Structure formats: C-alpha cells, structure tokens
Image (cartoon, rainbow over all chains, first blue to last red; front, side):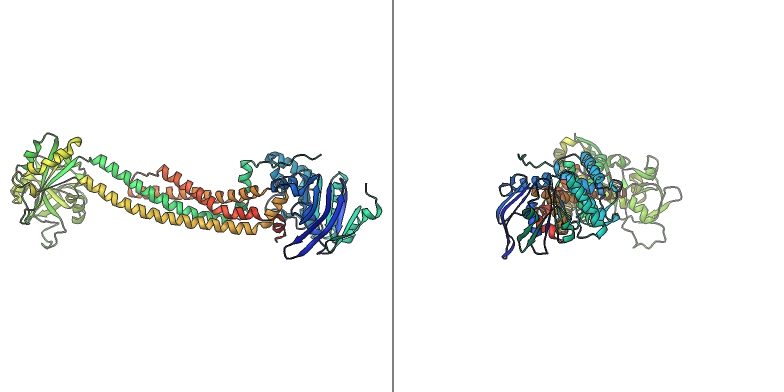
Length: 227
Length: 400
C-alpha cells in the first residue's frame, strides 16, 4: 500500500525533516507513527499523503510512483485513494454535517444527489445518522471529528491518514474516535495514525517510532508479527 | 495492478455552488463589494436611460409638432433698425407650391400687457401683445388649456388669448368673462389660455388678440413680424431658399428664416455631450467597484488558506481551486451588475415618469453593462485565483 525507500525531505534553510527513511505498510494495516514534536512525523504524513514531494527517495502509494505523477494525477490519487483526518477537523462553518461530508466527494465527478446519498451512508457508518442537519457549532468535538472521518471515508478510500485525530479532544471523545478508527480498520481500510500519545499508539497493532527525522523503532521489524 | 489516475471534471452547477461558498459565509462583505459594482452600473444605466428617455420624448414631441415648420421673421435693416415685412408677404408665400399652410402674427410694440390699470407702467412682466391670425393654432399645432381660440366674432372685439407663461405671470388660471387684462390701456377679456408651444416659445409670453381688433383698438400697423409656414417635407430646402425673397422681394436680407425643430434637436445634441461626460463618471465608479471586488477576493484567499488546503487534500486540482475563486469573483460582480441594472432601471423609470417622458432603457446599454461587470469580475478575480491555486497544500493546511 505504502512504500517509502530512502526518503529524505530537506526544507529550504537546511532543516532536515526526514533523513533517508524507508517504510513498508501493507494493505489492511493499522499503524501508529509516534514521536515527539519535531520528530518529522507530520512531514512523513504529508509525504505519504502526497501533499508534499520528498527531496530525494521514492514514494509509492497504491503502486504509483509519486515522483512520476503530475499535479493533476496526484490530485486524483488523493481524491480516490486517500482519506485525510486532521487534528482540527477542518469543517466548513455554517454548513450542515451532510454537506460537509458530501463536499469530500465534490471532486469525484458524482452528481450532487449521489454525493449526498453516500454522505448519509458515511454519517450512518460513524454513528451520526441522527445529526445530518447539524452545523459544526452545534456538535461536540468528538462528533465533529466523526463528521471529518465520515468525509474522509465517504469515497471509500483504501488508505486513511489521521494526523493527531484525538489531539483536540477530551479522553472520552478521543476513545470513541479511536474505536471508530478500529472499526474502519476491521472493515478493511489501511489506516495510518500520527500521534504523540504513547497510550493511543500502544493500543494499535504496529507502532513506528520516530525521532529527529529517523525511524528509531518499528514494532513490525522487531517482532515480524505483521502479515 | 494500478488503475489510471484521471481527474473528474466538475459540473457547472458544482462550480457555481462552490463559488457561492464564500458569498454565503460572508454575506455582508459580499453585499458591500457587489454594491460597489452596482453603483457603477446603476450610474451608467441611469445616465443612458435618462438620456434615451429624453430623446424619445423629443422624438415624440417632434412627431407631434412636425418638423416641417419654417418660420419667416423680420430681422433688421442694414442700418440696424427693426425691419418691416410687407403687409402682403403672407399672401405671396401662400402662392409658393410646396407651402401647405401659412399663418402670421405681428408684434404690437406700443401695447403693453397688465393685470389691471393699477399696475405701474414699468412692470410689463416681460409680456408682449401680438396680433394673431385665426388659423395660427392649426399651423403651430397649438392647443388650449382653458377657454377657446379667437373666432370670426371675437377677433374684432377686445378679446385675448394668453400664452401659458403670460397667464401664469398675470395670475389668471381660467378663461372667462370675469378674467380681464389691460392691453395698451384698454380692457380685454381673456377667452382662452394656451398650452406651452415648443415650436414658438415667444408666444408663451404673449397676449394674442385678433388682427382686426389690434388694428382698430391698438393702432397696429398691420405689418406681420413672423410668418409660420408648413411646407412639404421633401421640398424644405427648395422652399427655404426662396422664402426670404418672396416675403420681401425688395429687401430679402431683412428676413430671417429658421426651422424651430432644428433648435430643439441642437439642444438635444448638447445634452448628449453632457451624457458622454456622465457616462465617463459612471465608468470610473465601475472600475472602483472592480478594485473593491479584487480586494475582497485577495482577502478571501488569505483567510481561506486552510479551506484551500483541505480541498487539495480532498482531490481538488490547481485548476479546480482557480476555477472556484474565479467563479466566486464572477458571481460577486454579476450580482452587482444585476443589482445595478435594476437600480438604474428604477432611477430611469422614476425620473422619466416624474418628467412625463416615455421610459426607455436601451437593451444594448443593459447588455453592455452586464458584459462589463463580467469582464471586471474575471480581471479582478484572476490574480487572487491564481495565487490560491499556487498555494502548496501543506502550507495551506498549516495556516490557522
């Protein structure tokens, strides 16, 4: 699903965010990327999500070598293969949950009625079928993150990238969101979660620890337990 | 194993919906920047509309009055004195073939017009007494506001018909046996009041008495000062060239010929030049409105960086982001344009109705105005849209 080979990312000004990182994530895995802030885990997520291109090395997502794709092809890759969940939800204010989720399918070429139908199904899936007409400010933090997750999975992407999905939530809501991500994983979606919370990371089948732009530990490599 | 990566095209409806997002979430700002455009367009539509309406009124007036009226008036002698037209000038002109009708009036310089004998002699009120032929209203197309025109009986007696302005200055509102004015020291009964005459404005300040009455009571010498002729429309120039010689064969240089409808048209042309100036002012307002839209769009792009980043992560291409902001700018200025056309139309109809003109809002001006707003919207939105599309997704997402 995801294959990074000797990936480096250096920002202008000489800051090295990723230093020759190699990582394989297979279909159907649920992986935590853990590390303190500044360890390069966000850059890693951006690179995997094709929002950013590496300075050197090869990134392959779902079989596509990212460096060979045009900007339009990358957009299509993101639109059809990858769902994003952000720490701060990024929901449109004063727009009903249903339309926030349907917006996730805006660039898929589907007609509005079909987008709304799928959005309703996605909201049902995250347990918010009764909240479709609520606007973000009428929802709790946990519910907002569920709406954001529904938007990310409305197009059934095989890969879901979550950047600190519980970072802005209290522990009860956070646990609910994690439970939902586990359910999605159980249904077959490959999920990568970035977090600095070791407790959350500990609850996931595989953990990749990062520090200073390098992978310092990978539970899969240690135990060889992944398929 | 990999499916080809193709970008789906957005439907036009979706482009509109996504372009309206910014307008829906910040309605006041959208309203204000659309208002800038609206004021510019309204100014232009109003100027063009009012000038067209006044032109339509002139056309209506001219077609009602006729453009085939030529006036023959006595000018000055080469010595600078007031010239006298021969008494038989009227009969001579009548014999010119293409002349359809001719009528005459003669100023009676010695006779002044007063409301009563008590008014001091110096207060003439700028009014003049004229001797008028019975067929004068037919030739001039004059109509009466009150009472009747002189007839074969009254034109030998001290009866007078007042011009519109004269009646107003004398304070006479209706004709009747009680309404009397003093002309040349004699009391005359007002038998009629005229509507204003567009083609013979000097009669508006006149008191018109019958030809025989003028000669008998006011010592009028019988020399006409102005002849009004209706001429075959197609032979105007030919007739015009012989009128002076026919009216006064001995001194044709003492005769002035004019076509009153030309004067009205010339006045109109002056107003057109002024219209051009106002149109320029409207165009400046429109450009200022365009700058307002550009400003709004730049701010909108800055504020919505995280939305742009999100859309990129959802699969939007650079082109689709560009289209979104361009659509927003176009919608904004189109709203302003439509609003401006409506305001301009209301102003035009209101002003034309107030003036009693037919309302004319030229379709070309409306279409041109709307086209101009779209061009302005496109130009104003282009730079912000390109900036939005060039934002890197990670940078945009990192924005608060």
